[in-house]
Each structure stands twice: as C-alpha cells, then as structure tokens.
Length: 311
Figure 1 (cartoon, rainbow, N blue to C red):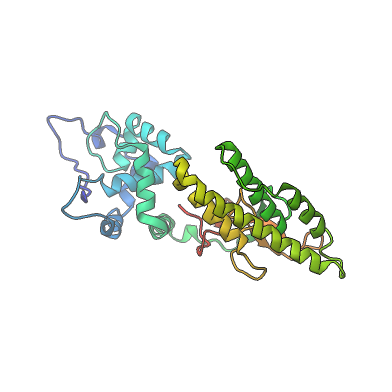
Figure 2 (figure 1 turned 45 degrees about the horizontal axis):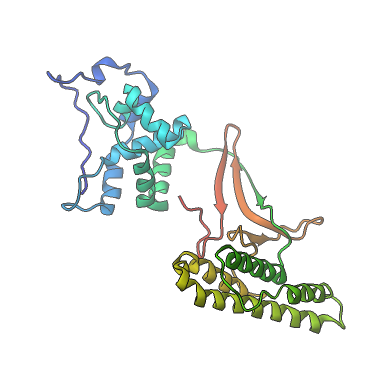
C-alpha cells in the first residue's frame, strides 16, 4: 500500500528534536533537498503501488533519496542504509523532519524498489538530476566512443558447444550414479577428428555429417537423462539446463541472438572493422566523456529480446 511522502515541517515539536533548526542550512545536501521537486517522483511512481491493500510501503521520497545518496557518495546498499542512521543530513535529505535513531529500511528493499520502477524510473531520476544544473549541464562538446568488453571464451563453433554439452551430460550422469546405455566417448573423439577438416573441399561433407552426429548424440543423452532423472527426484533441478542445451543444439548459422558459450550465454559477436581482429566476443560499451567527467552511457547485453542492461 502506498505511503505518501509528507512535507518537512519547520514547526517546533515538544517530543522530538528538530533536524532543520540544528543543521547547517548552507550544507550542499540541505540545499539540494530544498531544490528537488519530490512530488514529481510521487506522481510518477504511485502507479506501482496499491492504494488501499497490503502493508504500508516506505515513502517514495525515502527510497529515491537513498538511491541518490548511494550514487552521490558511491556507497553500497548496506552502507547507505547504515549512513542514514548515523548522518542527520541524510535523514533531512530523505524527508525526515525529526531525528530517527533506527534503520530506515532493509538494504534488500532498495533492490525491490529498483526492480519496481524499472528503466523508465531510472531515466526520470536521471533527467531530474540533470535538469537541476540548468545550462551548466549542457556541454559544448563531448567525446563518444564504443569498445568491446571481451569475455574469456574460446572461439565458438557448433561442434565445440555440442561436445561440451555431451561432456556435461556424462558428468551429470556419473555424479548421480545414473546407468547410461552409452556414453559415446570414442565416437565423439572420431567426430572431433572429422570436423578438423571442415574447410577442406573434399572432406567438408564428412565434417558436416560428424557435426550432425554430435548433435544427435547430445539430444539422445538429454532424452535419456530426462527419462531417468525423475526416479532420482532431480528432474526439476536440471530441466532448465536441458532446455538450454536443446536451444543451443537447435541453433542454425543465420539465427539471431545465438548462444556462443555455455558459461557466458549473454555474449554476442561484434564486428568493429579491425584489421587484426575481425570479430570480438563480449559486450559492447558506449562511453561519453566531457572535460570534467566520464560517463558509462550504455552497456549492450543480449538478454533475450532486450539490449538494455537490467537494473
């Protein structure tokens, strides 16, 4: 249930010590708190809360204030909550008119709040923080560049992925004592040798046949473990992995959002036109630099159909 943010009162209180009368009004946090239009966040984020059902939520100003302090002071969620308890300027910034000796919330509630407001909420907070500076936030010139954050993966091929899947499935069966009909160890070695000659014109057909056989073996092992794991009460534990392996095995050369690594599934191929390195495998980072600051503007990550980093 939504809890409305109450405006800070400067009137005296007989039961609580006043913050405003005891703090330095020239402190940057005090001036910033009085400049920000906090009602904008209340109006924008109230749609994410129920109006009359459930436990009362933490005030939106408190949560937004903690996020701003976290970025301003470069603190973790745990540290910013602890500093709120120790620092009265933090409490005034977050909308408290009286000193509160306890913790404002659990650190995990900041995680839930970030997920609740999503990317649009973060953009609103960012726009509001930029608008506070007026014309000072406008730069006459900026430097924009992109780079690739490479991942530590081997050169990806369909054969390598299929062989890794087979090895993982055999280890899984051995770990849980599942008796397999075949492990295909010797046949996999022979297929690996055949695939080495994939670029040879006369042996390309044999290499393609070996790749098809590797995929068939991997699918056979998956189906066998899917049949036998329910008797070991482990089916639900590994079903997600099986679906992931089947997705990798079903990939075709011209598919979009392909998976190039089993342990780094978010990696995708990037071609930047470099002479010494035609393709790079990792994540693409956009960086904007001014004369004063350097800003990480975007981080493209292949998350299903989205190319935005999850908050």
